[in-house]
Image (tube, rainbow, N blue to C red):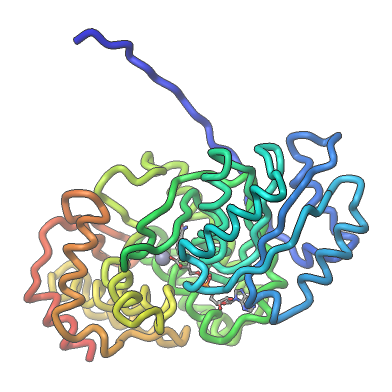
Length: 373
Ligand SMILES: NC(=O)c1ccc[n+]([C@@H]2O[C@H](COP(=O)([O-])OP(=O)(O)OC[C@H]3O[C@@H](n4cnc5c(N)ncnc54)[C@H](O)[C@@H]3O)[C@@H](O)[C@H]2O)c1
Ligand SMILES: [Zn+2]
């Protein structure tokens, strides 16, 4: 074959910063992050804010005051509010953002700063990734789920053609800033939902973290800030280690250990028209796959009981009526398509030990659903 063999190596590098009170005028964290690569410039930024965050607190006023105080380093080109939650992940919202970036003449040295839940970060990240083939993005996740999972990685996207995340790209952010103060205004449901991802990563990767979660489940359910911050940090560490050390940051392979519980979750979210939050759907999906793991002889019943008790103590659901009926099982095939070929799901071969499984016994899935009900 006559070919030039092209090989490009690429290093993706970005900080995930942990802080409190990011927008307090005296805090320099945001401008320090903006100036990390070019300290002597004034940096132009568009801020995209989750409407839920804007309504719950004083983020818009705080941004104006912050920009005034740090005007030497930050030029606030515009602040744009977009709908929060799944309503953000549409072509219409994407268009609105991209149009605004064009009007403001945002270039590849400017910044998009996205403040919000995972959904807003996903659409803003997608807009930033496709504008000029990539504008610098700083994510400021404001939910537990976004701080420990959705907001720290290399993916973005919107929903399309009735499928979750049908459009999107892999694109590393310039930086992520996790500010735990934002969590104060979260609804109880969203507080709990985000913890599902911590249970997930502990269950497949880290038995010590799992025991820690069990031990602190009461404090986490009461949303005590110190344990919540620790939970987020450990979950983020495990996630980031998976992205950098897993050998497959852009998910080209079939195995997705961090998608434990997610095949059913994706389906449940769509089936319930997003009545279930992502984390709630993940909790139910994990309960299903843990029950399946035990029926399949991989996980002992005591470990299953501990697992289900942890979910319930954290006020996460382990059942929804949408599990019944053929649609969830059909979700297995959609998950295979999403993976792009061979179906691989993650099961538990013990707490802290996720294993790939290629052959799924549909009768056993049904039995698990019946048992959970
Ligand atoms: N890109 C990824 O790698 C990745 C990974 C996992 C999940 N996700 C996506 O993340 C999304 C879920 O994100 P989520 O769980 O953060 O929820 P969300 O973005 O759907 O937000 C839930 C609700 O909380 C509101 N909100 C956000 N922050 C708030 C705050 N501080 N105070 C008050 N209200 C606030 C929002 O307005 C919204 O109404 C899903 O779309 C999922 O597909 C993406
Ligand atoms: Zn998830």
